[in-house]
Every structure is written in structure tokens, then in C-alpha cells.
Amino acid sequence: MAYCAANIECHHKTEPYDTGDFNRCLNLVHEVPEVRDHFSTIAKLSPEWMTIIRNWGRLEKSFLNEAGLNFSKRSSAPITNQLLRDLRAQR
Image (tube, rainbow, N blue to C red):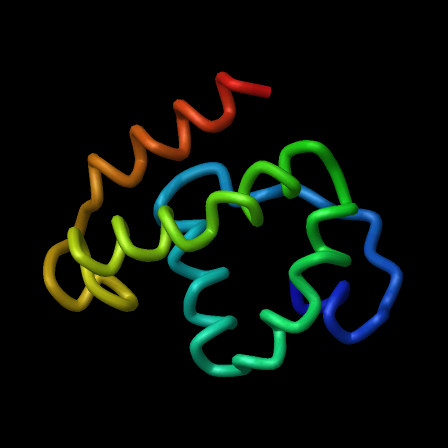
């Protein structure tokens, strides 16, 4: 996400696989809100990223409600993890 937002070519374009990955992405967006301005570019990285970006609001709300930013409420987010798995299965 950071490379894409900074317009730096990146060969590793893997989307968040689990809530640990999603937490790192969410932390980036919270620390550097301008990354949101590049969501449409990030979505073009792959069909997987397109799915994540299209569902970002839903994922973010679920994760923050369940675990809190940077897992500040609890150390796991099974509901959000299942949502990520369901989204991967839709592709």
C-alpha cells in the first residue's frame, strides 16, 4: 500500500491475508490518512486488492469493533478473519 501510494513500483502486491496483515494496513492508513486518496490505484494492483478496497469500510469497522486499532481491545479478531476468508473465497 505504501509503495503504491508513494508511486514507487513494487513487485510484491499481496493483499492482507489475515487480521495481522490487515492491522498493519489499517495502522498505515490511520498514521498516513492520505493513503486513502490512493485506494483506487491500490485496487488496480490485483483482483484481490480490488476486493479488499471495495470492502475496506466493512473490514475496518469489523476489525475496530472487534479488536481495536493495533489489537488494543483484544489479541484476536476471528469475525474479521472470517470476513477476510469469505472475501478471498468470492474471487
